[in-house]
Image 1 (cartoon, rainbow, N blue to C red):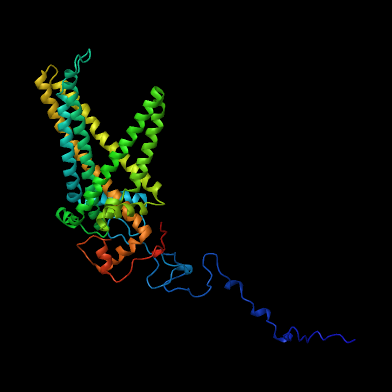
Image 2 (cartoon, rainbow, N blue to C red; image 1 turned 135 degrees about the vertical axis):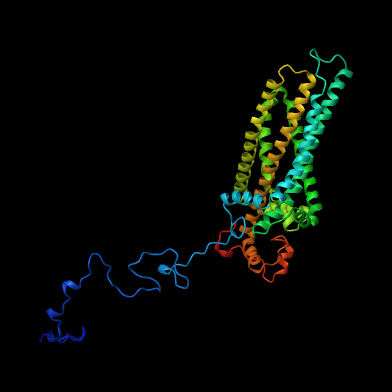
Length: 422
């Protein structure tokens, strides 16, 4: 058997002849090797404007592709108080402050009117209680004596409750009206006091209906809780007191849950031009799957406003007692009454100012929560971008139905811009 020829292997191809092997003299010289202080020249840069020896500039030149083939990140625009995308907690807080700063006369002026009315009425009721007859030490000797004392007490208590309910109604109406400058500030459109009320004119009656429905619901809720407590005490006697604590806690939880679910109803009624019940359903839908987040933001803002208000009011109260004891240590009854009235007026003015700022801030936060929910669920940020680019309806309210119907583009889907919705 013959052996295969080692110089002819068809399955591997012919071997190169020995005479064509590279010579030792053709090897690269040591001097041609790359030096330690220089980068190896692997070839021309892949992208225009790029050099191997220069440091990478994070601001990649316009017109050239980004490094490593990654898509270039473009931050969402922020023409106004917040960026046009779903919002974070810090952006909601900052946007509320920016709204008050850019629309100071509109936001603070409207809140000041409501707080001044409620504060003045509350102070009148409080001063009226100061002049009431003190109860006798040994108790009432007759029914007429008891009625002479308890009548003004019940009247003052009813007056204070009525003032609180009136404040609730005015606050609910004003919360919807003040959502207009917040929505316009998202596109850096300032809103005057007269312009805000002009834009909200057609929504006042639905807001009034919502306010009285909220008032009726709150009263019904309190009556039910009171009746349950009365039935428990009647059936169990003193042992029923042990059940009042969990009853009160459960009632507070239910009230907080319903209040959070209906938080953005005034803004929905005003901006989307909805009816009373449609606004309630809209708020209930928007707040689904976001209840804990909304409740946490609202609770934190509530504590912030009240703590700041108390920090301002406590030194004023201490100063009031100090002024009375220093300047009029042996004053008569008339002087004490005059001093008390003057200090009450000063405290009222300071309290109204602080309450107006706090109410404007809370209202702005609620309106920004509404806009954030619509950005997450309805793609409102895309609609705002379209209005920003086209400049359409500069004197209207961004997000209203008329503005959406005027455009040719349909309402955007939930996955627009790649941001997580819901």
